[in-house]
Image 1 (cartoon, protein in one colour):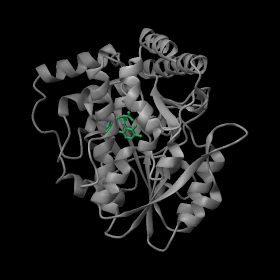
Image 2 (cartoon, rainbow, N blue to C red):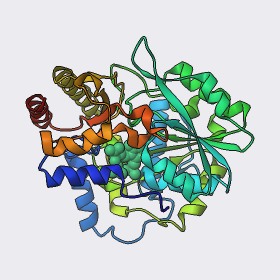
Image 3 (cartoon, rainbow, N blue to C red):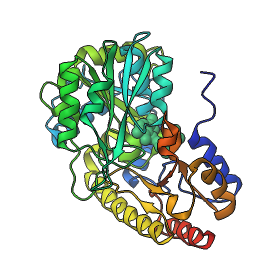
Image 4 (tube, rainbow, N blue to C red):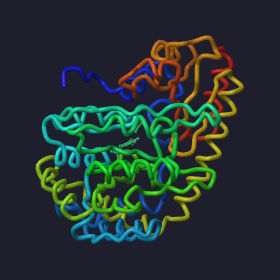
Length: 381
Ligand code: PMP
Ligand code: GLN
């Protein structure tokens, strides 16, 4: 792990704090999740739910997860054997990749990619192969080229990590892209590990379609999600793995020795809120869509070229119209020069030059915070 230093999120949040900047770097909301969720956790703690929960998770949460996957996506899961609770999606990704990847196995990831994938593949002794998401000239979207996907598959390829809605681009894979991914998995006998932490944050009426719902995919997909983005409590670090019994069992075997179990009282509060706070979840999505627009318009006024964003907390902005070409240099200078922090997109690339002209901005902030960032950016340039 020698090549892995401090994560870009920790570095940018530290810089933002030191310079009293508006932090549009690390993706966390600056308002809390629904009141009933917070009160629920409080109540369960005071009622004495404070000892180890069962390793696979509280049955109440596993059942609530199975029910929402059925309600929203028509997926049938046995909560006993096909849902497993972890310490965040991060814990779920770790347990999944450590259980599926043998030394020397190749793992396909789309580039740009969320930072923990590369590190976890290394921890598992795997080798990552990246497939670029490229700018579609007509729409400006980040899209997948089926030819590039196919040519990345080799005899040692075993797993594909599929993140949609996608961090950092804000792209949501469309039906054609998902079908291509599914076809490549089926034809090459790959296991898909999906990262769906933004499953409830798609905009403009776009659906979130879990890869596991495509033909032939349920039996070869481990689906991962977590509470952080769904209920705006990123610090609660509670996630879940869902899928066929043998794959979930494999992740469970590994996780017994990673964290054993996850925070119990919170699991009960989350189970309640997944049922009772559906309207809150929809309202949050709509509010985030408006925030996306607010930030995008302001960034365009400030001189950036903003890429389309279909979901998540994030949008990508091209810095070249402002006369810059090195996003790392700019991201490190921006907090002290402008009082705003963002994340350099190169941090999400193996081929860093591909992202060198992009900054990732988070819009999961109060409107007045976004406005303050925009005032500062206009004053700066
Ligand atoms: N995957 C993606 C794509 C993310 O953006 C994040 C950050 N929240 C995670 C996983 C980690 O999720 P958690 O906080 O539930 O571990
Ligand atoms: N998911 C958050 C982001 O992309 C960061 C999580 C973290 O700090 N590791 O900004």
